[in-house]
Length: 248
Image (cartoon, rainbow, N blue to C red; front, side, top):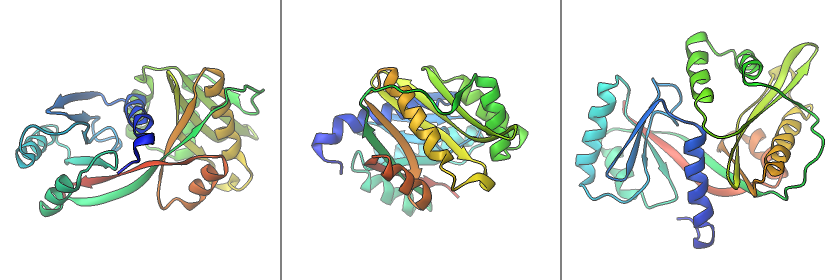
């Protein structure tokens, strides 16, 4: 469980991260948020247990399974250390749900000091084209990714580094009041190790601080050692963790 002194910040970060990566459809059911996004990313196609339950857990799980079956999606639950999900986790394990992708939510304070950016901040369309090129994302997934990014309801900063006329690195910052979240940070494989990721992240942080954000957050899978080392060196520390349980 998270320490009380960090609880308010952690819950704000969790809310902001859900807003920053919107699902095409979602609804609340007895304190759980069910998100549907045509199967694109687990984050936008999962059940998030936001509040304590009034209904029996087994009944709620069966309801969720029926909703995702209707959408022709497997049922995925996103579990966090913000609350005690031991009973739900055990129930899902007994029903054959697999545990997937444990990740850390990292956070750091911002001082609000602005500086001249070293990377370009571009519009949505050139950024989307660069991200698609860097990821090699096929067209159907690229279309769904574009729908998600276009539906973000908060101000965004789209950072891009080019090299010899081609995209080399990019990243996205999403501002929500006192928080800025970093997403989709990626570097071309043949250009890694040159500090491009650091440049993108530092300029996204500066952009957020200049917009009034007091804290920055991001999400990184636990076994991504290079990314974890970079973010630690930039002053990020773990705020809470999450993992997924997915039906087979």
